[in-house]
Image 1 (spheres, one colour):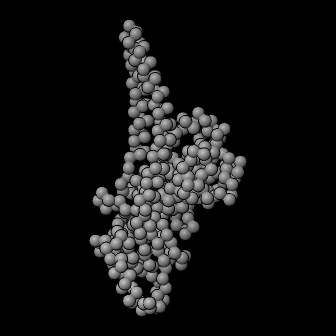
Image 2 (tube, helix red, strand yellow):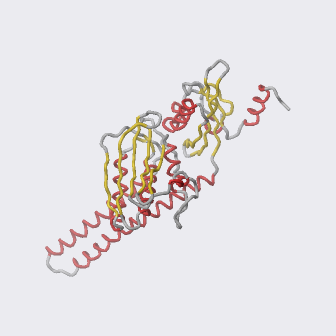
Image 3 (tube, one colour):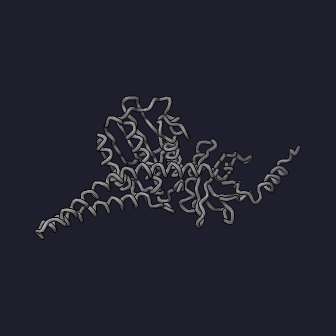
Length: 355
């Protein structure tokens, strides 16, 4: 049995050479002071003396948030990280452990491993499911103007009066424009964001509501908005935040089978660490969630719906965690639920990269 720490360390480093596992050490300024195994995260990069944001730009922000939490709490922090290099996207699991040095200095031990491919497949499966639900809504919104266009063209071909024919053709053109607007909104909503950008959160909310409000109205669900114009700058991936909003709105719809009130709010506040943050709330007046299920609903494959996958909320939380934020629920049975999203402010945002 080897009991010499130096020998153990050299043996472990040799065993990890060439692997996808990253093992490194950071100081209190969150700069790398040693890289023992570069792995997928740091392979081919000059990391020592640099932070993750300096190395990766906004993609490194979630890792730095985990490191800050580890320093502040003195506890191990874990979370997802996605890094894109050229055409290759890597899904990583990060573990950061605080270490007290003999001289009193604090260090952070970093370990990253690649996520299983199966998990990435589950993320894609849920995204396709959400897209399918939205497409079903949009199909109805497109079908109505198409029927109107058909009727207008039929009538325009039967009338002899030029003024009447022009009126029917004008109505058909207006309906075509309406279809085009709906489809453009859908394309904008699901256009992949390969890089993080400053998010227009209120704009994302309005786009999602544009595509869903008629369907919600047919189900006797009233929509209220309380969108603040004084929002902090938050960077991230618009397609991922869109996926979260769509999932939360669909969940609210299912929670109100007899109709009710859906309210979306945006604003600023302070998170648990006292940082300025963006806050989004999605409230419904539905059936509510039992207190003992408030954490279970975020676990993969847990569902109370007979046709649910049990992945929606788990992936929503993972996306928000990937932006350095949190997703929580407050709910009372027979009263309703409120899902609260918090994302730290900052121009150097993040993104889970679950494209």
